Length: 108
Image (cartoon, rainbow, N blue to C red; front, top):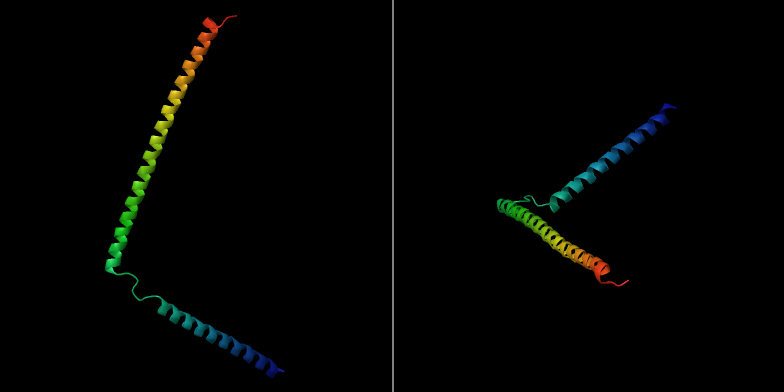
């Protein structure tokens, strides 16, 4: 009775070993494919300088955009305040003129 159990155990053990070997082969193939697709040297000294230059340009671009947005908002607020001032003045003068008309000129 021990021999069929031993055979089954050996079979399972061999299957596990085969699976491990297949996984190792697949991993080796994937690693080789990755090595082929990725260049050995990603950046160079010139590329690093270009990256820093581009990074500084992007920082300046962001600063200029932020400043222009701020000044745009300030100008919009000034325009709105002036319009509100003009509208308020017109309403006050119109209201006073209406009251004066009602009091002095309108006949009963």
